[in-house]
Image (cartoon, rainbow, N blue to C red; front, side, top):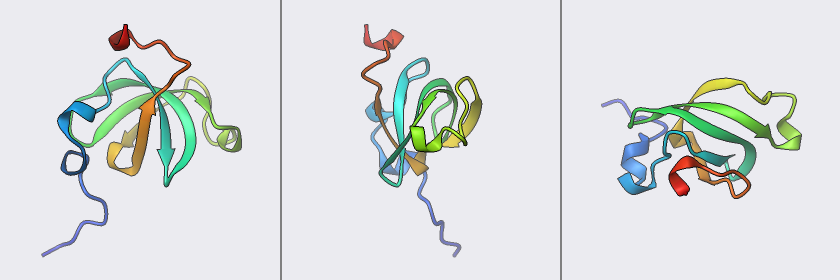
Amino acid sequence: MTRRDIPHYHELAPKDSRPMQGNTYRWYLDGRYVYTARVLEFRGGCWATVEVIAPAPEYAAHYTPGATMEIKIAHYQFEPAPEAVSPHSQ
């Protein structure tokens, strides 16, 4: 049997803690803050399309504000961005 190195997101987190499309979050990789990004599309499961709002200063060379990318949610930890007003939190 083949072993996966990273579990699927839906195996790790309850449904009520999923990122919401349209909301902005601070994203962390291995416990380090990497960027603030808005979720443009999340279909459930493992993948989301995000738009970078502001990279962490040490990652500014890697992430440009306005850039969009697909990320695997299971690789990241995230929390609502306190400085952003999200449509679902009003």
